Length: 67
Image: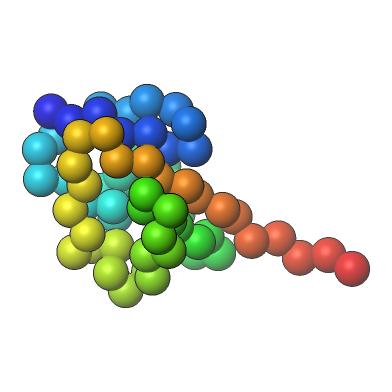
């Protein structure tokens, strides 16, 4: 098991988990969000192949519209 932070909340994941796995475990839909791993933006196309490591920090930002 590894522990990562998602928006400053500790989350436990199995070894070898991807960024996409972390989103799914938390019930976060990939539509309309931006993700950053350790301060670097991860495009949606790379989330499935981005392996997480113990201590990683994930920031999830949801887009919203307004005027």
